[in-house]
Image (cartoon, rainbow, N blue to C red; front, top):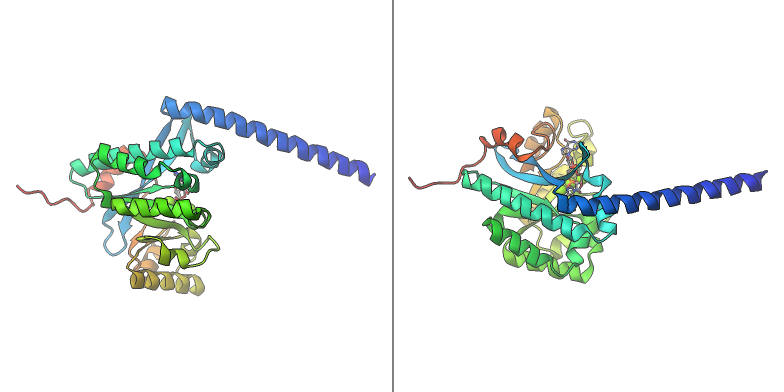
Length: 282
Ligand code: C2E
Ligand code: MG
Ligand code: MG
Ligand code: MG
């Protein structure tokens, strides 16, 4: 009967709710251990100058080395956010990435380091101190660090988040809007927050050179970035055609599999030969 079918659906629904809760609890426990066991590692993806291919920076992307498998962030960052572990996870990534960047810097590579920040880190009152300490410990100059925050996190952060962002700005750190164009938010935050970079979501980059509407949208973001003094970075560049289109549009920087996949620090080093070198007096 319809009623018993509905009952079965309800039972299955409860089962799956229960399974999800169990899965979440297991992941949280394992993640807590992973943090102290050093299983959370940082990979780096190059960010290049669209005009000439110079590597201008890297984005730090966290991975979990779990039982010989490399777990992508989308499988555990949300768990960290929901369980209050995001502060510890974020601080770990920030310290590790600043340390690695300072190492590259000591080798003469003048790179901009981008680190992703979750909404939950902004409302935690200690975040500005965490950033300040990571910079002090590593010796990385503040203007070589860029914090990436998604549009949705910028909108969700509230007043406490805004104070935090002004606090990191006061340190001299840069601020990027990540996944730009996907957040269903107003442009007010570009006016009100100390944004220095706009990262155009790869959804708008995918059809560049094919879809004239995407081309016009990216052209508008480039124009807006220029007018507001913000650098524009295109995400998810996978083809030469996309890169050529970005160059024609005057986009500043690009990131994507075409230019380099994320990898451990050592795997990035051959690419760094093409970076801007720090001027060194003889
Ligand atoms: P995101 O910050 O937008 O990072 C870019 C994502 O796009 C990365 O996925 C990168 O591997 C992927 N990607 C780069 N180039 C291409 C391309 O050409 N094609 C395609 N299809 N993808 C490309 P990943 O590493 O899986 O990270 C996913 C998201 O997880 C990140 O998106 C970021 O929001 C979050 N995330 C990563 N690391 C951290 C972290 O340390 N802290 C926090 N809070 N979030 C992080
Ligand atoms: Mg990012
Ligand atoms: Mg992004
Ligand atoms: Mg993204």
